[in-house]
Length: 140
Image 1 (spheres, rainbow, N blue to C red):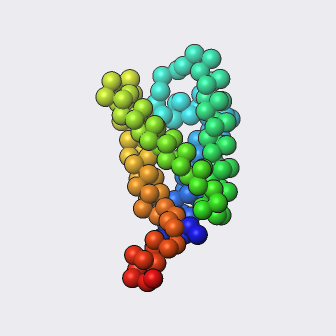
Image 2: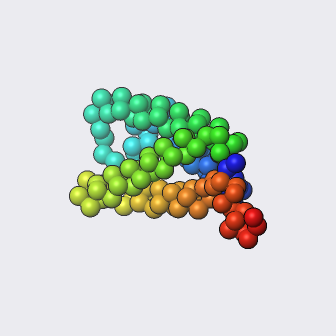
Image 3: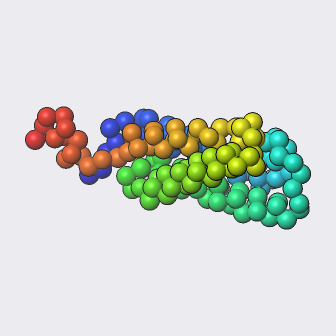
């Protein structure tokens, strides 16, 4: 049986990531130009809104999966594993573009540190096998 050492932390982190995904997804779906303006990005060609819409679909889809995982993380580990991958890729892409000068720190806002926080908290509160936890606590 899988259980989390810190189920409240895990549930909170999952819900927080899901809410961030909903906000980003809704923003990029309903107001892509406005989202770009909020981030301080220069006007993009109209075809960029198509990419924003596709990004929005993925954000909203992940939000749904994370909401399922928040209810029963052990039963939905695949959503959590892939969110770890998404966060790692997000961070690498952000750092690459910051280092290359194509975006500024004020434009990427929380992207340089929030993925690191999400990954660290998910790993820290990750569901573990119950037997391993009991042995760790000195129980047979």
